Image 1 (tube, rainbow, N blue to C red):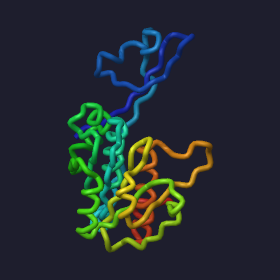
Image 2: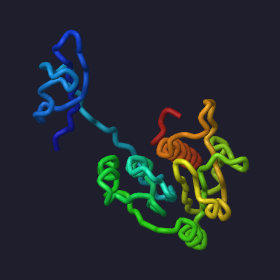
Image 3: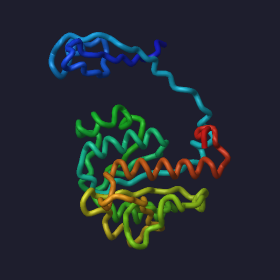
Length: 226
């Protein structure tokens, strides 16, 4: 199987000299996208991923996620892609959250919408209640006074599956879900803004939880430098 190649081009126009990625196999990349001058290939890189033993951590890592009324299809697609990267088992798309049937979601997800199981529900509170009754722990990612800082989370959840819940970009997670959740967590911030983009916040949270879970089980093989 051929190894994927990444190619970098540079514009021949000395007043432009735009440097950008592309591929010689596509006719789009025969001119500079900025000034339309001729271009030349300056670098070629092989896209090689080092194999790691992920089976053990995947079997223990039982985390799913609920997207409660996420309005942006781009954010949803980004969360799909992040979910694939950290091994989220399933995504629940609630309320107005668009599904991968939306082309903007699938375009941003880059195929992750195929590898990640998902389910659509009109009512996030109702679904959260059903999941809780099945034994899931509901963790809401929200900046509230009762929230526990993400980086203080200990591995007190290893025997129960978790559903991490993120909410609407403006109004946050539905209060009805917060009322029945098991834990509220927040991401400490230093800037003037009070929140991250929801897809960014989701990525920070699930990456750290995977790190804590992996280290707690001695599975440093996927985090060799920590």
